[in-house]
View 1 (cartoon, rainbow, N blue to C red):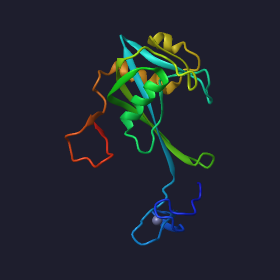
View 2 (view 1 turned 180 degrees about the vertical axis):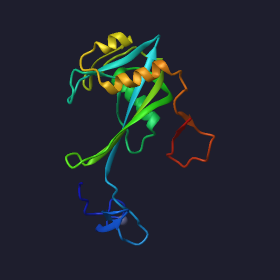
View 3 (view 1 turned 90 degrees about the horizontal axis):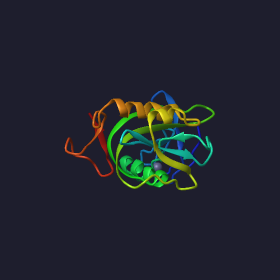
Length: 194
Ligand SMILES: [Zn+2]
């Protein structure tokens, strides 16, 4: 794991602290409480279906340049996750779409070679406007395709295929939906649930 020397919260020197069964880098300054639980990133992918056809993009960058997949990307640290997937669908495929529900998530644990974990959340979105248009950098092509056409695409990602099948075989709203009246949400919180 990457070793941090200074506390990202208050700038003090970090120390090693035994917590939860292992040594972790921690800030022992009064009132700070920062503890480094490891590096993590959050990704998001969007399944957009119009008239039974699935919105796909062709990757313009490595890894996997030329491969086809659902649009998606990384969630910025100060961005709501559903806004992130709507932004990525628009940026990568030129389609304005609105999240209806979440179809599932994939968690990737880190290891010695890649000391960062990742959570990739897949959403279903309703297309609102716009014809598919690649951005020419991150994506080379974009379009709507049938499931059969999708399975014949080059290097189609198994996770994309899984997510699309979930969307085709479970009605919109069957997954986790955005909840706002269920409990008092703090600023920055987004709750998705059954
Ligand atoms: Zn600190």
